[in-house]
Image 1 (cartoon, rainbow, N blue to C red):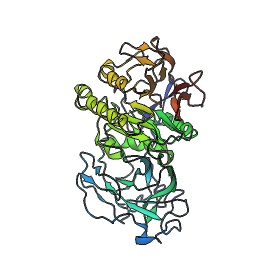
Image 2 (image 1 turned 180 degrees about the horizontal axis):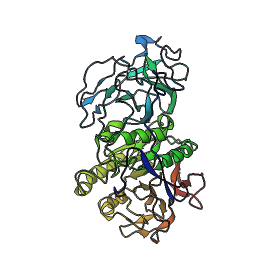
Image 3 (image 1 turned 45 degrees about the vertical axis):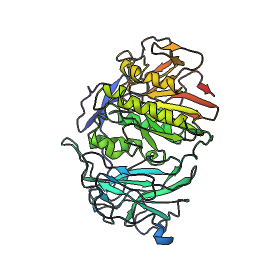
Image 4 (image 1 turned 135 degrees about the horizontal axis):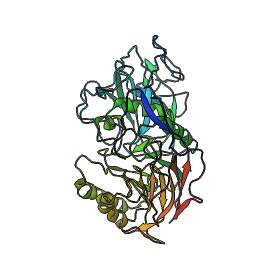
Length: 479
């Protein structure tokens, strides 16, 4: 949605969960401060701390994967045993390999969140923050929560705050990629270093390539500045036990403000460390340095694709710096090439899912469907028989009948389902939609989508924050 909301350092607009129309003012969530109330560092509940028996260096080479590195890393760096490099976000200077150095303000890791840059079945990425003096950047992991016996080094850097950012103390960002893992396996991990490790989390890798194993993921978007409401929805999301979250953009209101990212991570809580999040760039991310610094995603990170078993996901950016011409040139070519390559594999994906921020088909009375995006990409999606297109931007939940053609024609077979899932907290759209023949449901309240995938079916069900279903019956696609 348009950038009309002005944030102060101390307050946020918060709207009622059910309908979102009666608003009040509440304190802005403070960035997490694990150092305690004005006293010396004490750590946070659940931290392993230093000298924990859970940390096991008894293996060969102390269990360290690869070679310990030192010094600056330049524009990109190579994680141990990973199949490619990791870019340093444009504007970040001084990125360096982590070292066993600890601060005294707050060395306890916070804002721990996982995602995937490399193969989802054999790797995961994790980013977290500490005080600016704590340089320790290691992931300790293992097969049980009581024996973390493998250690992977990462890189740390300063995500530069803006002049209006209000943070409890200067911070350092840490990023590590863990590769060479087993598919469909639950690992336990903690982040930090031998001088102080944080909580132990669990994370399950994806299945092997082209696996027909059933799984669940969730889709939500547009928390924007309404982090208290997003926190409520995130709690409900955890009850569905998804393998990952696809977030359709506008996580924050001002993408360059580090303070807002701190609030978002605080609202997302520990689920962000156990349920990886794959993000879509929205207009409020604004191609900001902080967005690319704080998320580890495939490819060039702005546009990318990934696979989970027999599902191929392709993610686009409909708010690029280059403007709308980028949609019909660079990104249209990427989309066509990516889907062509996926379908040319010896075992092509069974399902294809696309996602971007602005909806091609929306009944939002204020903005409605984005015809520019529709003109640029719908023909390519139809050419490659994409099954579902997930979006946000419009602050409601909406599902459609199968659509074929730019005029929104409803078909029995061969069409694409368009799902707007932009109801993660931002000020909700009007309760009465613009009538459209292709709309199944329209709900202007706190909601997400739950998707269950099997080799022969994909079931999509909108869910309110209380868990009740939005559609009278789930949408079931078949192969």
